[in-house]
Amino acid sequence: MKLPIVICGATGNVGSKITGNLLRAGEPVRVIGRERERLGPLAAKGAEPYPGDIGDAAFLAKAFTGVLGAFVMIPPRYDAPDFRGYQAQVGDALVSALSKARVPRVVALSSIGAHLPEGTGPILGLHALEIKLNGLRDAGVVHLRPAYFMENHLWSIPVIRGQGVNGSPIRPDAPISMVATKDIADAATRLLLEGTTTGHSVRYFLGQRDLTMSEATRILGEATGNPGLKYVLFPEEEARKAMEGIGMSRSAVEAMLEMQRGFNAGTIRPTQERNAENTTPTTLEEFAKTVFANAYRAAA
Image 1 (cartoon, rainbow, N blue to C red):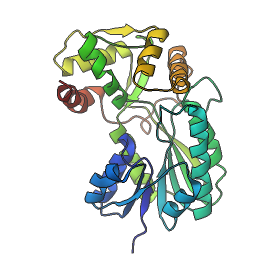
Image 2 (cartoon, one colour; image 1 turned 90 degrees about the vertical axis):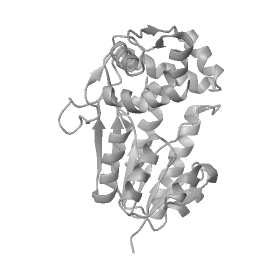
Image 3 (cartoon, rainbow, N blue to C red; image 1 turned 45 degrees about the vertical axis):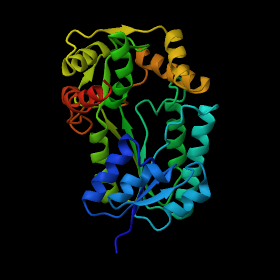
Image 4 (tube, rainbow, N blue to C red; image 1 turned 120 degrees about the vertical axis):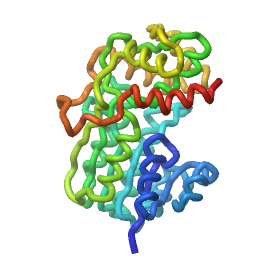
């Protein structure tokens, strides 16, 4: 009988795709999420739903018991009054549970910039998580350090539709690696099924090529029938008000702005040069014509 693989953040961009990959491969999957209702579509496809609080170490220890491996992450909770405190709580719970359950194979979602001890906003919580996970002695741990998610561009759809431009506090000319979460999930699936059970390592995912926000905006515009769509550098104060307006806590907003400053300064970057292993296949053009264009039309 096959041991299950447990997926944290199973309804998110990466976790849902890993779950789909594993189910299609005929693997038993245990999916963790805050709400049973949101896990329903995955359960309908054959996953074992395991709803609960990812910050509860006792709950996680039960979820992790008797599994082949686990995909772990800190799900975003942008309304948390103390964003870093929330990240620390979840990180502590994950590591405690993984240790207690003696999970042999762990794949953890981290980020580029996770090697830095300051100046990275929400990535700082992943820096701390990597350190904690490296304390596990009975598990093989792989830290996934992807670049800027292409899916992050989906947050721009209301701005594009409402203002006719794209924009953020990130400089229009700052080169940024952009990666599709599908490519991260495909690699994570392979690691969960075939990975080693000893040692700690890091894997980077840098997308097909680096792009500036101006270049990315042109590509998104062309895919949605908006040729000539422009990218505008938004002042931090304007961005702060917009993020607070959609329910983000001040703590989370300040973390996001700090991360954007890191992109502008060029400090949030990988510790290795682009190569065949860390370059992923999906282009932004492909993402724009499929995922982004479909979401843009649905928002009409």
